Image (cartoon, rainbow, N blue to C red; front, top):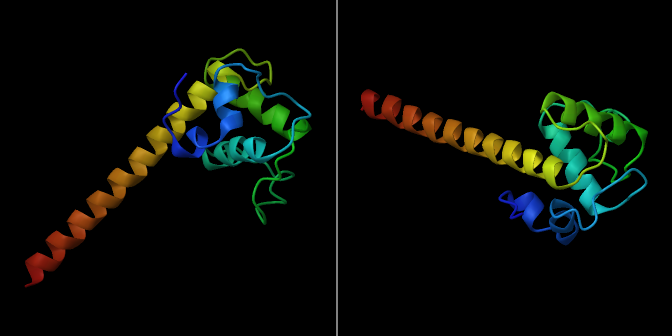
Length: 123
């Protein structure tokens, strides 16, 4: 599966995960895990152990907290809640991160246009 989000597509391990070659499971460590964890945080999932109560970036350790949050993410998005990050979970994460990025970009463009309109109206 082709990942669309730059944060995922640039990581060789996540490309493997998106093809179940192999999937990501509890016990894995590294940058790919940290990217998935940070994405979950960015989507609003609270991970206080992983981020030291929001004081640091994700730790990159697929432990109990990550397992619990992955299962919660899967449940909330109609996926099988097995706690394994594979093709379907990566696809959903990718879709949501792309949608979030697009929404933020659109919001920033709207703010810029509104600011331009206000500035122009004052002139």
